[in-house]
Image 1 (tube, rainbow, N blue to C red):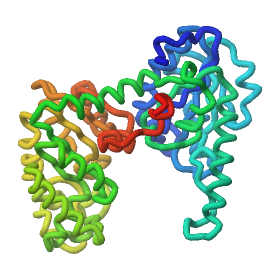
Image 2 (image 1 turned 45 degrees about the vertical axis):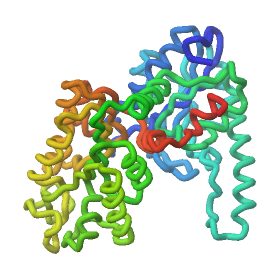
Image 3 (image 1 turned 120 degrees about the horizontal axis):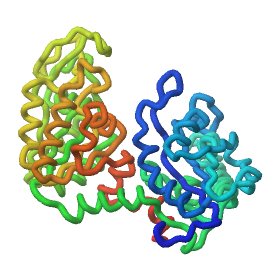
Length: 416
């Protein structure tokens, strides 16, 4: 079933969205991209005469109630985005009465799903090495099914529109779909767009294909890096992982972030790139700080000659030129992860240079896909959001889809 074909009039729809938005210390939203992304699906249901039950997680409360991660903080922002009043259910598993009373055109927002350990379905307070772990896991899976059944009982149909969590087999992203037949579960507009954007990158590659991977750790990106080395023409590696590569070549990196147990992995990436004929683009200089702060003293150093007491915080001027030249002329671009500590205005030049180069290439006809919270925050910070082809709301989900993995949140709808 597709969302366009389903008749929502007089029906209650429970919709899984990804409203895991960043909040400041006052509980105010600093980037509402994810809320805006879900609006077309939510408004469509209301406009068609349906009632709306919205569910999401926020942060990592690890199965415990944490007021700092309450979705009650974003109720007014959701109401403003939908131009409709929103009722808040302070307990997502005890919202039967509120759901039953819901009338067409009304909106119910459930409290953070992850206040319940059943949402993620992982045993709490027991290590994997414990002999009782398997039994605890089995028991938790049974509890997860009951939790999903409760959520499903609130509505007539289920809409999955949370691409950011589609790679997780959680109660609300996959298990809940078991309680609806094929005619009463569907992907939302955002999910359809996300799946199409990934398909554009992988099935319709126009060359040269340039991928830009940033972030602090090689280990968290190694699967996607290895996968991309079989697809791209150029791979730019930037951010904190730069220093694991520098260290692998015997460089001095001062206090820069490094994974000492991944030096051989970094060298392996370089070998694989060479074997596949991929141009691997690594930084050669860094803008360094003498502390992790926006007002740190700065100096530019070769990335393999950073003195003690200093750490690499951003791509240096030579590296910025190198990255910009590598992006020039690209016809397909994937960007995931910044080039430095872009949150600090004094250390965002590398990320800005990448963003502007991607925007310029897009203007020249490239298809540019931006994914991952930090990259999205980057393009928003630099005012480039309307100058790229597509901004994905998912980080891990996008990377796993590009790795070719089946996403549980998509498979649960499509019956794969």
